[in-house]
Length: 172
Image (tube, rainbow, N blue to C red; front, side, top):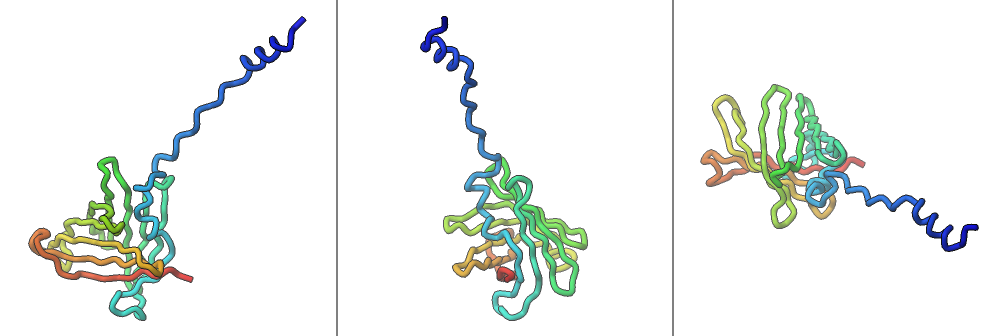
């Protein structure tokens, strides 16, 4: 005859062990969320002319949260896009590909204010032979819009001048 204690011991031995918790997805860290404020559907305007729409842009978080992709659609012209990811070196990398085949690689990360800052060497920035070092900064604004400021340098980053200044406003 089996005693109650024996039944309890047998039940404990037969019960499967609690499995360990699943690890979080590989790109679920706070660092991987550094560009989440840019994700969405946008109308884009020059910051100095907020009534003059120059583009639409779709920013998507893809690949299990490991990448952020922009599809840039300027008004009346062909577009381009970028793929952004946080790599194992701890820095954000962006590859811009334009519709005429140019590519630009940027590297950077968030600054102390949480703004994303990336720099890269842009061959033929304003035409053949006009190569520039470019610094892009993405600012999350209080109203939920995003400002992208592009600054260019002809002296490899010693000094910068404004190149472009755009404000992304969410589509309604």
